[in-house]
Image (cartoon, rainbow, N blue to C red; front, side):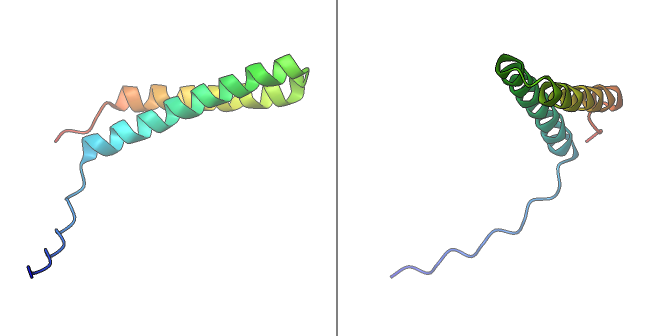
Length: 74
C-alpha cells in the first residue's frame, strides 16, 4: 500500500488574480442587477427596478475604479 501524499502548502497570494477576481465579481453584479431590473420593469415593479439599477450603477463605478487602479504589479 502506498503512503498518502502530504498536502501541498498554500500558494502565495497573487495580486493580479485578486484584482481580476474583484473586477469579475463587479461585472457579474452589474449584469445580474440589470437583468433583475429588466425583469422588474416587465413585471411593472418600477421601484424594485430602480433599486436594481442603482446597484448596477454602483458596480459600474467600482469597475471604473478598479480599471483606473489597474492590476497590481507582480
